[in-house]
Amino acid sequence: MNWMRSLLVVSMWGFAVGVTSHATGAAADVVLRFAVLGDAEPKPDPVFPGLEQAVADVNAMAKQGRMDFVVGVGDIAHKGTLVQYEAAAEVLARLEPPFYPIMGNEEHGSTVERFLEFAAKWTDGRQRFESPRYVVDAGPVDLIFASPDHGRDFDDGGIAWIRGELDARATKPVMLVVHGAQVGVYPENGDKGVAHPGFAEVVARANLAAVISGDLHMDMDRVQHSKRIGHVHYLHVPGLERTKIPDETRHVPMFRVFTVYSDRRVVVDTHRAGEADPLERHAYAFTLPVVDGRTAAD
Image (tube, rainbow, N blue to C red; front, side, top):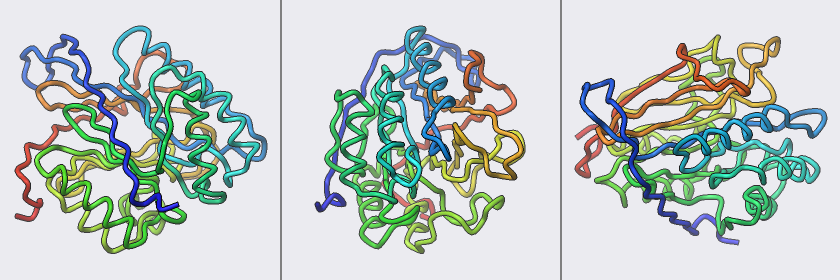
């Protein structure tokens, strides 16, 4: 299967909800809202209590207001085993908004074909995926879903695909969903992530607003999980079933919610699974760039 060349484009235009812009004090609208679920891959047993609670929370949010879709950053099934895939499918099939996942290094423990089969099952058959790489047109921003070629890294073809999709959207802001950010972004495990030197060309694109990643299973209370490097904002999504960094002594399942306003402001909230209100200490905000096709260095 030449999945690297395949492309799924999904239109997600929606209605606007009236709010007040904290940045300007003027009236603004919510033009997009989506949740992001982090790594699961529980071990040793295929049980997903954190994922179950997060799915219930997102469904409740969807009933109360706008929730356009849900993003998965990879590593749902530990080592890509069939028993983990099947157990996760029972949970994720309950998710009411559309679900857009990517592969992680754990899914690469099995095959691309198995991932694509279960990505459809995770959405209870409502969506089918021709490729683990695709683009979602989400209205004010495009999301590029870039599953790695191997482990958490890309080969030359994978980098070329991401770069090509960014260039095709040179006048529109883009968020990139990858399993791991590039090596060095999170010094808590600085040698882990995308090591391909061509990724520097990816993050140099002026229309790349944010990189959304998981992989590291970081404790949000003990690391710097959200940051700006150059013009790009890096947002870590913590693991739902296990915490690894800075150690494994404490695990609090959390997920994140991105809200985009009509004034281009993006607010990233973090929710503890099972609690309705976001955690104010983990709030992060940035503004989508106005781009004209140039690179950030121009």
